[in-house]
Every structure is written in C-alpha cells, then in structure tokens.
Length: 175
Image (cartoon, rainbow, N blue to C red; front, top):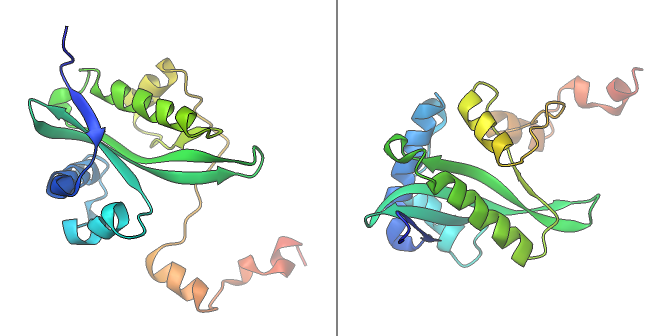
C-alpha cells in the first residue's frame, strides 16, 4: 500500500511553503510577535554557501504540509554530535495521519546514520497533546531542565559588555 505522504529534503523551491508553515507554527504557539522569518532571510541558512540548518518537508498530494528544521549540536558528556530539532510542524488537517511520526523516525534514522549520540528537541509545557505523543514514541520529557536564552537587544547589550551584576563571578559565589 503506498504511503499517504512523502518526506524529502527541503529544496530552495520550498522556501515560501516553509515560511508559511513557520508562520502557522508561530500562531499556534502564540508567538507571532517574534516572527521575522522571510524566504530571503531563511535561504542562506538552509541553502547558502555555509548552511547552519537542514530541513525536511512532508508532502501530501504534492503539497508541502509539514516541515522539520534541525541542526547539529554537540554533547560534551558523550563526546559526540547530536541532532537538534528546532521545529516540527504539521498542519492541523494532517495531524494524526502519521506524518509527524514519520518525520521523527526519519530524523532518528538520520541521527543514527551520522553516528550521533542523541536526538533532542523541546516542547512547550502547555502542549499536552505533543507531550503525550512524544512520550508514546519513547521520548523522555526532561522536567528538570530549563531553556536559557539571550536574544535581540538583551543579547546585544550583553555582547557589548553591559552585563547585569547577577552574571558577575562575585554574584555566582555569593560575595
């Protein structure tokens, strides 16, 4: 029986569809206020001379309805690279079709083929459906870990030397 969907590596012709899916993901996650992606901004990072990320797309009847954007990270404990899934999104009409699971399986296979030590991603704590889905697949949701992030103006201020006193070594040592 033929598969109801196809998964393949993204190509430059997919940029508009990928950006549309990213916009839908941002809306789903209530994060549209952070959205700055455009096909022109994304293109060099996926398909330029020095790409920093990769992407797979899922198609149904020739239409791109899902994407998984990922990149290589590194585990110091394992002394091996890993695969980090930045975002996976399947349009609501195609959820529960097996496409999300197929994308994750494809990525797990890719991580194994490349000799990576692990495959990581994050999930929003309010997304109970996704948490249950990932747990059913055998993923460990790690409740003791928190994501730390510097971005935008805060990142620039920190890089420029305007560091909050809480970041100083004396603050770390309680002095």
